[in-house]
Structures are given as C-alpha cells and as structure tokens.
Length: 381
Image (cartoon, rainbow, N blue to C red; front, side, top):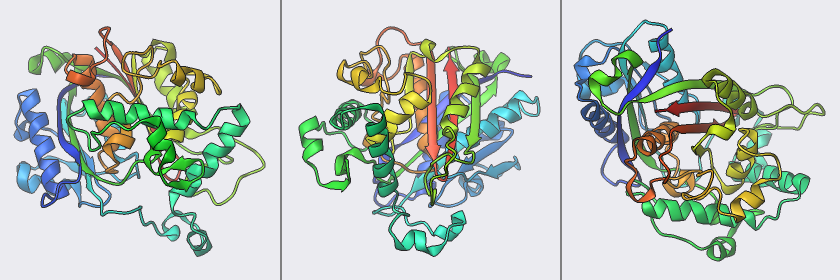
C-alpha cells in the first residue's frame, strides 16, 4: 500500500464574500493548491469534493479544465471534507492513482441551517418541537456532560475566548476581533448554558489539497507533510448524537471515540504524541467534549487544561490554532479540510502570527457532523 503526502494547499478566506459565488471560491482554492504544489490541473488524475449549498464539486472542471479526470461528489454533512479526503487517500494508497485533488467549499445563506427531519428519517414532530435547530441539541448535551463530570460552565467562555484570540491572529479567519470571556458570557443566551458567541455560524469559504504518493512527494515540494492515517466512523445504537430523537437505555460511545482510536492505532502513535490538534467546535461545549472523546485528555480534565492555558497556542496541547469553527464559521463542505490546511501550515512552520512554537511534528484533526459521523486524521512531517 502506498503512503500518502499532502504537497499543495489552497484556501479562500472564510466568512462572507458578497458577490463571489461558492464555486468561484472553490476555483480560487484549487488554483492556490495547484500553485503551491507546482502542478497544473491537467496533472491531476482524480478529484473528490463536496458542498452542501453551493453546487456540485464535479462541475468545477468547467473552470479548472476539461481534462476527463474522474471527479466524484461527496456529501456527508459537516464531515463532507473529511470524507472526501479519506476517499482520496484510499485512491492513492490502493495504487490506483499517483496524484489528485480534494476540494471542499460552501456558501450558506444567513441564519441557522434549515434541515427537513424527513431527510434523516425523523417524523415532522421533531422539527415542530424546534429540535432541528441544533443549538438546542448542543445545549442539552453539554449541560448533561458538565453535570456528569463536575465541570464549571464558566470554562465554556474561556474556550470561546481562546478561539477568538486565535482567529484574530489568522488572516484567513472570519471573526478577527478578540472577545473577552466576560463579553462572551454576557452575550445573549441561545440554549443554556451556551451564549451567542459560544456558537459558530454558517458561512462561506473553500479549501483544496493536492495529494500524491509519498515516494513522489519531494518531486513537488521540499516540505511534504505525510498523511499518516485517516479514519471515519458512523454512530452505533445508543450513541446520543445530532438529530437523535431519543436516548436509548443502552448507552454507546460517540463515533468520535471509535474514529480517533482507529486513526491513532493506524498511525502507530498515541494521543500523547500529538503536538497540535484541530477539533470540531460547532460550539464551545463540543470542543470540551471532543477533547476527551478523541483521547487527548480524560473526561473532567478539560477545565484544568483550559484554565492553565494548555490548549492555547503556546500551551502543551494547542487546540484550534486558527480559531476553529467559532472564529472561522462553518461552510460545511470546507470545514474538515480547513483543519488539515491549518495543520499543514503549522507543520511547515508557515502559520505566521498564529504559529505554534517548538517545531511541531505531529498534527491531529477531528471533524464531526450530523447525524453522528466523525472523521479523524494524523499528519506528520
């Protein structure tokens, strides 16, 4: 099986870009990734990509080049980008292809996501009660978690404060103004205990990656980053996830627990060896819970880590160094690839004002989406 390397990265700034379509943002990101790798679109042997609201990724060939390559659309909720990356990795590891491109992009309208319960096999009653607005699910889940593990809800504002601080240092982020924990805690309450500034927002943006067989990587770049492992899991019976209409008497672990355990096993390392982590933070409570679900800490340890600054850029375990979803927003198709983009920047030492000190060598990413799916990667240099 061939090993896989990331040799090109490109991004269109996240946020709101009036007058620029999601497709145009995707084309920009793809051309930046190709330029970074020193390649042309005609060099690509395959493409995988996805978008929730901005069109079909395969149609981007109209602008990028009508070269006849196989280009497959991927749609998997917030894990769309992570799923596209896993598909591309498999295409190279299998020996089927040597080099290809992955593109994730989106351009969502303002306001909360509007999803039909029937698309998830749920009766209309679920939407009529307001539970399709996922802010309520996240509020309920984090309240239970805080109670079960004796965590002070005030830590949520500290997590969001870090996100805004990191976003202010990142020129590609949407939210580039620092907010204090006091301002965040005093913002309008959305779903207790989560206030307005503890949530991310639907947004716009695009990311593209060029992947190749590892043995060819130094043909294209003198600073390749290697995709040591990528894994994906869906939920099991008894796991309480987004759009779950009830809680089973038998409880099961989140798909994040299984996906992260699998990716570390395949990469041949443990969570303690991670130098930098990008973790799904649809809201501040998600970052807190996912820190433990990914094995980066134990349940209940998060409060002491956050209060000690361990998850900050200069801490022992820097988390969401680009500001995460809270500072960048969440264009569904691009979100998981943004995490990989950030880790490649960090491992190259190219992250500028939000660069992690100490020469990081191992990066971890985790993306989570409805109705309970999780994708994780380990990157090394």
